[in-house]
Length: 162
Ligand SMILES: CC(C)(COP(=O)(O)OP(=O)(O)OC[C@H]1O[C@@H](n2cnc3c(N)ncnc32)[C@H](O)[C@@H]1OP(=O)(O)O)[C@@H](O)C(=O)NCCC(=O)NCCS
Image (cartoon, rainbow, N blue to C red; front, side, top):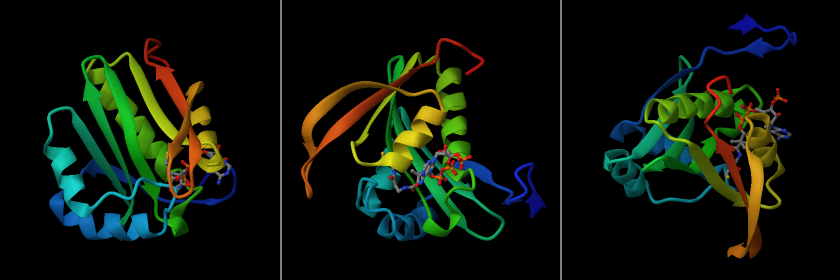
């Protein structure tokens, strides 16, 4: 463990592609992450095997601590799900996953990335704004249980420095 310039402990994080044996850890993360899309475990392997599917996990030396799922179609990508194990939040895990996904997208000549989130999900909104996503519209009553509007956000990938 190292100490970063904010004086807090920083952890060594590694991003890699999803493996079918990750489903147990991902289900545990989802149990703690009610704001994330609650997919059945079969969906993870299915997305990872789909052309255009992007499924990344982030691990420390001891455990899997987060994942990101996305889909690329033509020159656009959609972030479908992201969640971090509750004890490892605010340590840069989601940012590490997002930056790795954005690198993947650039290599695939993606020009626009979009996503939807519950309007009340302030942590996710702050994360995406921090990485240059901007509001792009509202989908009324898009979510159920409870019913809530979705905020659509997007990021253009035309500038290689961002
Ligand atoms: C949203 C979520 C993925 C963020 O993961 P994370 O690993 O904690 O995020 P990071 O540590 O990379 O945070 C990066 C930046 O995002 C912002 N941010 C993240 N969580 C935040 C919070 N709870 N409050 C305010 N800002 C927050 C901050 O700017 C943060 O930078 P800082 O810590 O230097 O201030 C995590 O809270 C989570 O798993 N939530 C439940 C699932 C979910 O909501 N998924 C999104 C569905 S669209």
